[in-house]
Image (tube, rainbow, N blue to C red; front, side, top):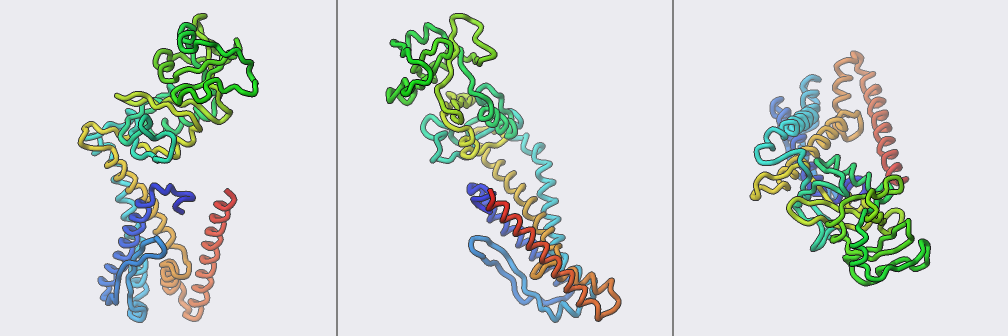
Length: 365
């Protein structure tokens, strides 16, 4: 469901995949019908709300005159074509590392392929499309999984401190604000500058308003309560932030790091990344990312459409598939309709229950 359990940024993949999968499904029915000498009365595309689809109109009386085996071929053709489509897409995905290596590097970092312009991670000094990210707060990033794990680590672990030289503190903070931790007004920077942030030295209970980028450029060492700074000339400073806000430094190849103050979850939701890094300037990483994402949707949707249509449910292929199978295995004609109705009603109830439970779980979230 777009916007609920599917990113809205993927809506075009979603719609294109639905259209391709439904067209291939209906083409399967049409080819099988033509092979069985069944006349096709019509075919076309439709849009239900925002969801595209396709249809093939076959004469019911003509199909019912076919043998049970021929009917089964016609009814199963859509499912079969969806399975072939899903399998082909899965095979292309498995071969992607071999073909993609001609123009892209893999497992050498991540490339930014999309950024939400309303997010704090964007902007003139923020992340932009085609940025190559190599680390987050010192945590190395080589692929999408490591990108996700690093953001989770930053969010879940206590904020790290930074070992900063005392000479630097004296030069940058002319007047040390000798406040105690827990004072009502601990924002030592006020509205001085957006590039500065308030830091606290827990040992001496001192606050410093420091330029973050300059500080991190000169001092890369980190510290915490169990691992203090080794040099006495260095002070362990912690950014003065609330429990969920973090100072995040995103390292980029060939460009300055992006400094972000906020919740790491915002970065994860606002930034799309790819495992692929282009070897050539003229070949953007977005190309192979879009190709790979489309294949993943094809595998998921086409496979799901095949399984769905195998369920003996009203208005789905499974209704006619089940009836054709029953006609073959049940010798007594009077029992066929009874058994067929029982199977279809049962399948419809099961599918309806699954859909209801799925919607209910989404509502509970």
